[in-house]
Image 1 (cartoon, rainbow, N blue to C red):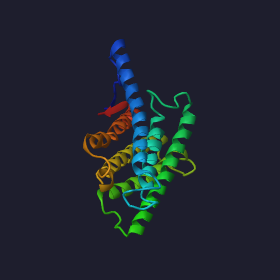
Image 2: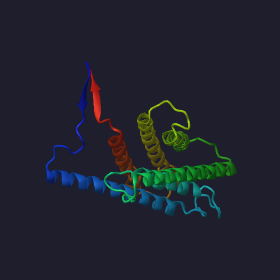
Image 3: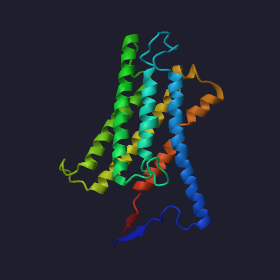
Image 4: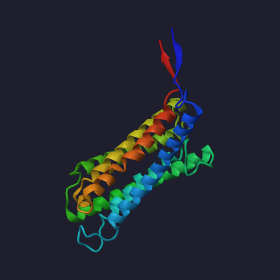
Length: 241
């Protein structure tokens, strides 16, 4: 015999005062995630100084564009593309669901294009310097993140055009797969960014307590994104026998 057991909605059972505090704490966390993503992008842009690099002692450095492109792709575009759907607060909270989906597609497409550009810069830089490819954990995680991002984009196409692609999987399940894969991609991106901060290039410019502060920055938006996705796709009902 099967019965439906409902999950309690988040925040249910709290008093009005407690729920108000809880709602504002969640809203503050989302705002902080926005600020952290933008701040991290600015920090990496300042450190990389695209076009010039003392690290390579050349007037023009292909390498210097790589961290900037990747920060724009994952710290900014991908983060904002996900937080658009935040129920607590979004930069586009006044837009309809239809517009949020379009903006999400725009941000994620832009993230893929900029990430591919960043990949091109690092490949060209290593070829010019005759350095070995995929020699570090950062580069290996990075290529896995890019591959997962491409697969995630393909999954998103399936969500939007299930009939055109003649898919037999129900749309709710496709959305669940899409959200789960998106979470994996974002966590991979976070690990890749943190691994980049272990590189000789980064540690040559940032040291001491500041290094630890910036090193931990990507963790916060990752936690907010993880919470948003799990709450958004958590089943409301659990089937028990």
